Amino acid sequence: MTHGRQIGTFSQKMEIPPQVASMGMALVSKYLLQKATSDNASGLMSMLPSGLKNMFSDEEKTQFTTTQQDVPHEQFIDKLSNQCCNGDKQQAQKVYQKAVNTLKDKTGQQGQGLLQSILGNSGHGQV
Image 1 (tube, helix red, strand yellow):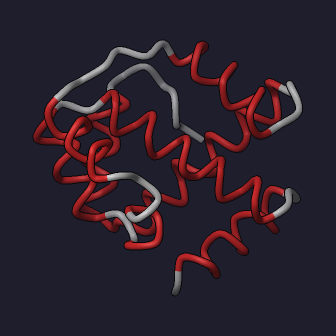
Image 2: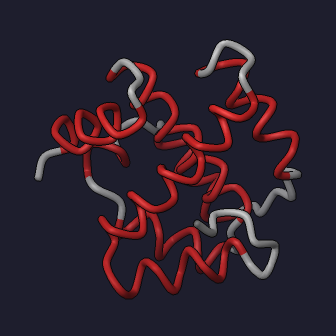
């Protein structure tokens, strides 16, 4: 399945425009990559669909695999809410949950374990 169809399916599930779905998926991916250890970020980056991976600059890709950032989940949901969901935090949480599940589906068994280790035991990303 191409990146465009993945975004189309994601936007239909969320009942949001494709451009918002694309932005949401990119922001969630970026958040997960920032939170990941260098090794986990490298692993996740290698599993991302090329269309999603290509949304990041070479500088961002390097930063993901060399620097871990502890971005609080609530702070990220605020950012997602403001950038994608017209300030609706509940909608932002739904976009986050669906994006994480979509990434788990698209990265397969190994990606699911990798995402779980990035998310830790915080419960964020659990549906």
